[in-house]
Image (cartoon, rainbow, N blue to C red):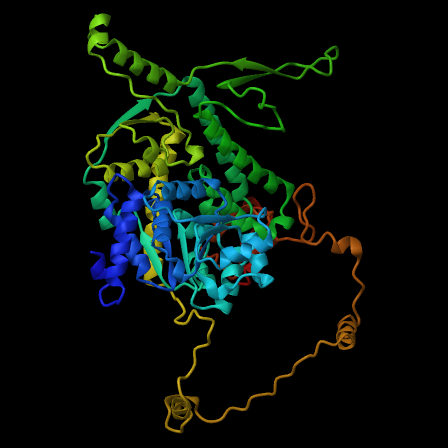
Length: 621
């Protein structure tokens, strides 16, 4: 299979055998899924590197581990820019430790002195390194760039034109163009946020190859559907208090979003309750408001903060414990194990003390999911047998029971190899890990229990996660088909290849000369030199017959007051977006003069009361 991909290359047999050895080493006792081999072979086909956008099912930590095992010290040192989360680093380290031939991986941190880092750069081994240390060593010329084989960037979705990683790649490519760059991410939805984000990331990394591996890819879907695990879906009804709390939080979120829609500074299409349930919503709002954050009113800033708090409250509603350190309004940090808190607002009178106001009454309520777990445990314990002695004689030893938090991000499935899995909080990434674990262990029977709250935001978010990932990959596939990637990403300028072509292009019979229609007179370019005296005279000339600016007015330009009103700004965030959209849809109103109507009329009611003569005068007819 891999030989067909690498056919025609002198190192095809060596790479194939080495890759088979790496696959066996990483997988350990179980069989490595074939789509991992397809991904690795596709990455190796591009020697200059590429960017891989993978579904969460592909476990790119294992893919990175395979690339590390395939790395030869003779090629040079391989630097892995340490991810922001410790979890990915620990997963890669676990895969390397569980392999048969674990390569030596060094970790370069701030505690390592500079004179100890230089031998590591020249050793040809793999190193984890932080971006801050790497950029400092590059700028101080402490890294022999010619001894580097490549760079691996695990979090491609967090890169931008101004990120430190982009600066590092630009310096490395300017010093040595042979260094390859491979970037990975398992968050496809983050790669479609903004305008042409994937294309811009590829440009700053000097990458021309884009690898897309979604869940619905043929190799992936066939491999996972060959032997799926046994799934039991358990739907648990929420208590009446949980239903009421969820309903009220959603209503408050909807009210906050309606207030944000009234401003003309954000795109109203993204302001929906469905988007507000995910952390990516904060990125959507921040991307739109960051350039104008200093001009926003206090009300808009508070709405953005409230939406983030409300989303956390929805997550705490279905969690085991409420852990919220809220410093404003009510303090909940002292009641970590309370399922709900009832606020009783006491009426203050003239004789009441100052300390009276809000009384917190702790109401302990059992989580409905706990009850389901206990009932099922009792059923398995009681069964149909009533003879305890007979049970003890033929009974088997109870398998060990483990509790695992998803926030730990450890390869718990490879470590424990469970046969029964109870998913208390459904998470799409963990579900994908279960599918890969079953595909790697075809002979092992795996039974999975999913516990959902019926008609809850929890179920809605899980289904939306799948829909968002599929939609993101569909968008990336369309972008890839029409993506404009520079032919030369080696910091060179494209031009004519020879002097003969240059002479041919300037000949009298060339198409460009005929299309030009003769000589054109071009005015001479005038350049201002950077002399302070000249510029000071220019400013003095521009200020002739103009009043001196007043300091108190200058500092208030584009800065709203406490009420959110911007002085001398008639087209700021004071317009009602719904009313503006209604106005633009009225018959006879077009884009050429609808703003003139908005300036003359304060409301739709005032516009409706205008006589026909005034309307004709207003629209210029």
